[in-house]
Amino acid sequence: MATATATATATSVDVDAAVRWTVAHATAGSPWWREHFERAGVDPASVTGAADLPRLPYSTKEDLRSSYPLGWAAVPESALVRIHASSGTTGKRTVCAYTARDVDDWADQFSRCFATAGVTPVDRVQVMVGYGLWTAGVGFQGGAERLGAMVVPTGPGNVDLQLELMQDIQSTVLCATSSFALMIAEAVEARSLRDSLALRVGIFGSERWGPKMRERIESLLGIETFDIYGLTELYGPGVGIECAAHDGIHYWSDYYVVEIVDPATGALLPAGEEGEVVITTLRKEGMPLIRYRTRDLSRIYTEPCPCGSPYPRIAHLTGRTDDMVKVRGVAVFPAQVDTILHRIEGVGPEYQLHIRRDLEHGDVLLVRVEADERPGLRAELVHQLREGLSVRPEVEFVPHGKLPRTERKTRRVFDHRE
Image 1 (cartoon, one colour):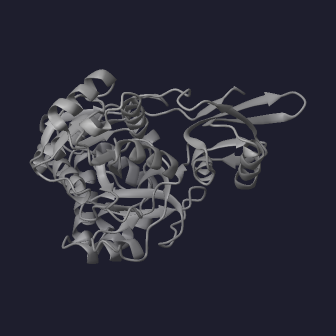
Image 2 (spheres, rainbow, N blue to C red):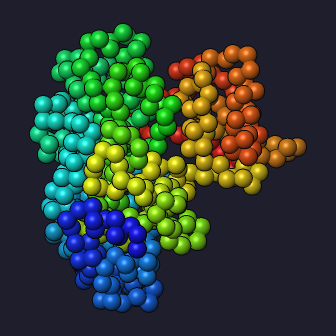
Image 3 (cartoon, rainbow, N blue to C red):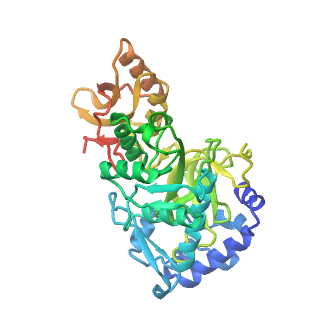
């Protein structure tokens, strides 16, 4: 198994032993996992290491929801010290439960993320993401504190407060969703505050953001930005991060085995081919994941990173299987639009996709995008989108800054056919 070999050579952890422990731990502690393996006709005791993972059944977000709230847990509830949960916008919330060691492991992983992005103990880290049930706020804070940096826990929203503390505390690191970072960057530009700030690094996660968004934020704030990866079902953000090479995301292979599978068939794909990211945890006590289908689309790099890190990389996410919307029978992903907009001068990073059904023409795709309209821009954009999406869209231009900004994840797709 190519992924297991790469993982074993990248770190000192015994991956096979860790896989055996995870399967045995889940089976011993969780009736749900025992029944899951029994339904699949798999004897957990026969698992000897990572090479046996393809024999095991997948687990999914629907499985987590069906065991809500703590049916997935592999330790007694008395051993759990914290829970976090997803927003529940696409269904029942998914819950992640943590033991004390899980919380400690998460802080270690997140600290590693900060260090990879060049953050040091002398930095001042302003955390502009949500606290409470959402994993992001406390995750960023725990990692920064483990590193030894000062945390400024402003949480999301309240742009005036954010700007005030960025100036008064002289924050050097900004942690946010890319959507909120764009809002902050545009507020800094509008108020001519850049010269009064000490920012040098931005770490953004929880949503996919393209190169056009990165260029806009970096140019307005004068910072270097880093894409951080994670999901609630694991620990939260902190599963991996890009390095200064900005070519893919290093994931912590002493904590996870990553496989890439065909999202349609579930067949394991070789390293280098794009598919759905499937993750098995190696140390997680509270709610271990075994062959968990993340719905994220990526690929595993086969070559080492120029930065010299021993940790393997996955490519920046190209989308999610549940982001896909069909227009006239053609699968369209928002990530495709990101890529196309990046190639066109004068078009901003913010956009919306609106799909409606016309009685005469069937499905109609409208791409609403911020741009300074110039001769030929509309025709160029329609052509590029048609070539890239295999669907001819309508295009609507709006002035820069007019599409909604948000402190959380930006909604891109509006399907008016339902």
